[in-house]
Image 1 (cartoon, one colour):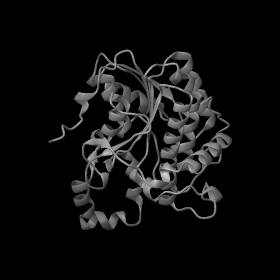
Image 2 (cartoon, one colour):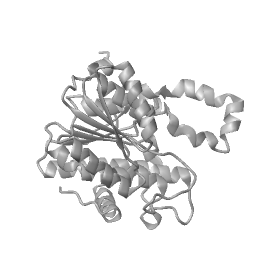
Image 3 (cartoon, rainbow, N blue to C red):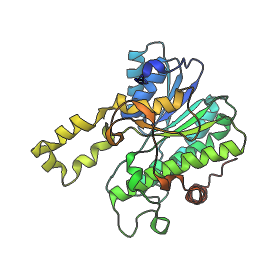
Length: 312
């Protein structure tokens, strides 16, 4: 029997719902916001660059003139900004149906966040851990709410380096990225376990975009091997065969966020070869990501690092 692909047409009506999407000025975040706005949701673009957020909001309104789009200043590399952003949201909204933890950085030069975290785990994990915790009561009070956290196929080579979490001894960009993406899954799964234990109807899920052509790739394009690949033509051939555009990369996230049939703790990604591209389907993460002891240890580390303690 041929499986019918899940597409934007499958998204149920979102009228009356409030969705916060981090990193929504471009790429999968923007495509997610545009799709939800087109289905009637009030979308809040939570972004570091306010000017780009305003421009993204205008592009969405051009596509969907009747949409309700707002912006929210959020720098995930600053706990001060995360707290201020959560406070600003709480002052404006009394419900939160969808929290989409989409924003991220990939293999930048070594750097630290305002609070001393290595930039990738600081932005990709600790920032989202804190933001989600500060908005948890709004989620718990909203029937049918969901938190969807963006991971990556890079989680497969990730490990949590508790002895040198911030790569102060030797920075390896890809290893740090893999660590942050594994952390995203450990967080999503542990959060779901805690929600279930608390008897909450809020769901925590995860997704990944496969190989999506977005601005996230910009540091990879500056790698030493990138000019050679471009000159050889291999990069273009590989992209044509294995990658998809940002709209395709957003579909697993949108399915996790809106499909009525999903269950908490599930993980969605592309259906194709190595999950690089294809229809959005439920996929499996590696064994390490499901380690309950590792999930709990990272959770405790995250609470201590961010000073955010969840109420569940």
